Length: 133
Length: 118
Ligand SMILES: Nc1ncnc2c1ncn2[C@@H]1O[C@H](COP(=O)(O)OP(=O)(O)OP(=O)(O)O)[C@@H](O)[C@H]1O
Ligand SMILES: [Mg+2]
Image (cartoon, each protein chain N blue to C red):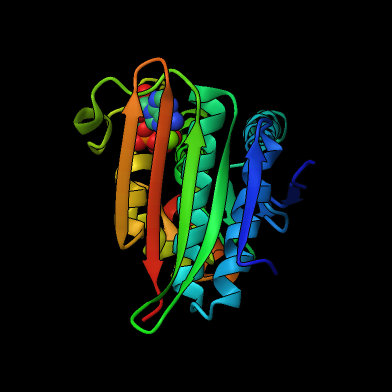
């Protein structure tokens, strides 16, 4: 497998494809079953958000492998409407679509590092990393 | 894709064996409510032993299925939730507090019998 691979998200089934690829990458890096499930779940949340709110975008996975660190980095990018109030969107239970509002705060807890940038009218970019322990 | 629903006496049994996409989840919700209505089943066991991911959407559908079935007079028990899935649900902040659960299908049926006082 390439050290970097991306999936396009533009139809509902791509959510399944993305989380399967995420799990596959996690397995290759030697993550245990619990972390594999965490990574697959985080991918599923980010992919669904792209599909629901931005219609299309991309998720890329990258191995981080150097002397200090081993881990999996995922970057979810879309050119959708953007998020006006990020701290509100990061709150448990906040949703504009009748969901549980568990996605974004969940991804932050499922992963070790989390970084979100969003600009109204320009889109959203979320980067999250899980380290191999 | 459709998730098969089996009838056993007064119960409906579902063992989810496929990767659940959103459409399948919604279809399952409809099919189950329909089957409860048609069969008059008083209990339902949904076995999740083969399910290796439950994200916020699937969790919402499952929680809704439990409340909706309850409204229709059928008790639902979820069984076989994998340890890794239980842990990710907690990370998501989803506690499924009002949802009856059991270790496996057999325990699930026992739990139904107790709850329904059969
Ligand atoms: N990529 C995105 N582009 C635009 N808005 C977004 C994006 N991702 C999330 N949002 C906004 O942030 C809110 C919170 O997202 P989050 O994933 O936490 O919850 P949800 O999608 O509403 O529900 P759940 O994920 O539990 O099904 C969303 O309701 C939406 O308004
Ligand atoms: Mg979401």
